[in-house]
Image (tube, rainbow, N blue to C red):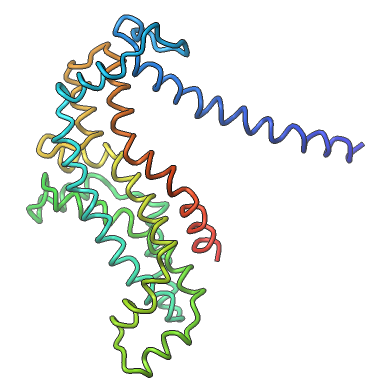
Length: 277
């Protein structure tokens, strides 16, 4: 009897998983995509129905002109690119040290370093600190916040990956007279390509879509795409214009969606090779 139940559950489980994905992800995504192509009248009550006539070109043009998309796009790049480069550089160097030195002190430092994954920063404290440093409302302050937030993610992935790299490679380089930075740059860094690719894509997704921390740190002084969407929607520019709101969402998501689709294999390989090991 138990064997029969187990066999039935094994057959039902994939179907249940697919239905859950369709309901939780597929349907909201479908509503966004089809509503972005509707007219204002058809989009008043967003649903699953297809538009009578597709209005993607008109809606995207309206969003591009009225929503300050170009300025917000370059604002997002201004914050995201330095933050990602900085957190990868510092995080990989810190991971190398943590992975190669086995002591109780290093174990404590590693636990503290990855604690940021489950302990989000306190917004009030961060804003007050930035004001004391004179960085509140600046791109540099926002870059520093993102680097601090996602340093734990990089250390978590990269440390596990470095532990799988044989020490003999580094020892051979040191015998040839290479210093620490040269050993890292010539030996370790090229081997980190899979896991750094994973970390890059994930952090880009986090930073690109963030509105919460950007609102408190640079709100009103620097536009990013999610922050700009929030501002124009709350100001009434897109009031009841769901077709424009969803068109903005689609337009904002396209760059990283393409990158994610192209690099999804690297994400999976980086997670399994770094975090699991």
